[in-house]
Length: 134
Image (cartoon, rainbow, N blue to C red):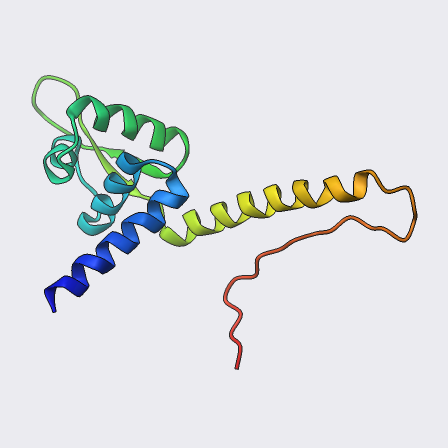
């Protein structure tokens, strides 16, 4: 029974990895989802990734709008640390779907860019969300 949970976690990690195109990004994203936000030190311990990898990856993920951060108010001397949060999985999926649509439409347009006849029209590929089929 326990093995099913492990397989499901690996499946989720693979799906996130396919979207984020990085093992480190997927581990950090899944960790942040599970914890509903965390500081850098917690992410390092929780993901077992090298500290420099975590810091660099958090910076890239923030720049790519895959995570967001909030500053922690700290009364002590020194920098105020951030708590990092993941963007909604739905937001990630929608962004990924748009990227796939763009790539497929560029590929489809290659077939029609060589044709001179008016009967050929460009193809538009759209991925619908939430369509229930009965």
